[in-house]
Length: 170
Image 1 (cartoon, one colour):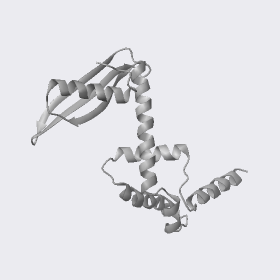
Image 2 (cartoon, rainbow, N blue to C red):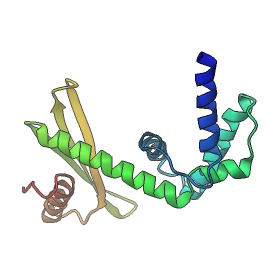
Image 3 (cartoon, helix red, strand yellow):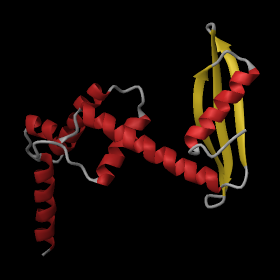
Image 4 (tube, helix red, strand yellow):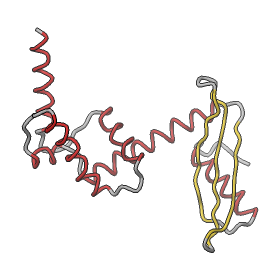
């Protein structure tokens, strides 16, 4: 009986890897999105090539025969990878916004500096997470800056409004 279920899982795996186009599950898409977020400098076109190579490597190590062209078609293309990353980013921002809005105290740390003649302004938000019992930190964004206090205040307000759905005013 156990062998039968193993065969069913293997058959399912081979069907997924033989699809003409990618139709990943919610969890599969989220895992790919998380991997892409971990390597922000990786171009989608490069990820489109690397992903089938990684899967092919695992299949080769397990001595499972595969057709590379079919495998490549079953995995997300560069456009799909971009959509997956955007959906993951949206989920992350929504989740973080909810966590921040639940916190009783929020703190913002801002720093402005010039590097190579270009002004930079970084905004970092922190709060106490009661569930995790630790301080959480979230980089709102890093902008170019003219360094004026009024511009910096407007930039802070804009960043918080984006994250917290326009509910914060300084």
